[in-house]
Image (cartoon, rainbow, N blue to C red; front, side):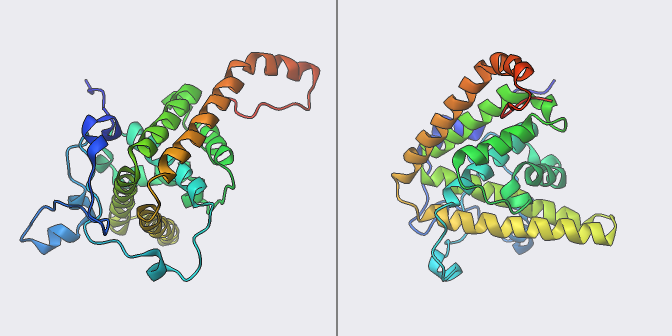
Amino acid sequence: MIEPWTPWWKNPSAKSISLSHDGSQLIRQISTDDTTLSDPMTASESIINEIPEGPEYPLPSLKQLTRAEPSPLLTVHLVDILYSYCFTLRLYNGDWQSDPLGASTVALSMSKVMGDGAKPETVSEALTTCIEETCSPAYRHTGGFRFAIGLVDDIVTILSLGGNAVVCALCDFHRLIQAGESILKEDKVGETEKARSFKKLHAAGRKLFFMTCWAHEQPTEAWPSLARIVEVQKAAFEELDSGSGLRKAGRKNNPQSKVLIEEV
């Protein structure tokens, strides 16, 4: 029997996550085996309900990564990414290490920002796309709309924990993608398919690293503000769902009307 998994962001200790000023973890595991440190699979081996480790090394500043000003839409992209992260961890009961390639594939299929290069412009747009994917035939077995709303709650919880929790989540997600890359290198699939998948995973890893550095530089007040926006959107989705019966009935009289999100 599989024991219910308690997400790390529900752990009381998540309220007191501490990172150094440069974004790196304050406590590091010391190993004499250099290969162990460089292996993303080994680096991510921890108790699945414990707080994921933060960055192993100091995070570079955004100015070191790009000359351009960061897009104001990165907050929207973050919502998409956190949804995918929470979805993947819950789908794998917290144990993504059991199938890193499968988990990373699921993650990219859920995150249109990382998987398809999408650029949603509002939190509503980002969440709508994620929820529609959750309610699609591919994933409706996970719980459909109610499961999706629970994931939005997860996002609110992580954001409410503050910047250090966001950095740890993104860092954990980065390790997941890196582990998937490592497995893919050894996978005996067609070279064309392998190259395409590897390219997507590598791009996702770069995106996650950039997002981690960006999140580290955000002011403390940014997180509760974004959490409130996500919470408002959650309430709007629930209101739409509560009126779905009326909307479906209305469609019989008005064939052109559409339901924003519907399980299929």
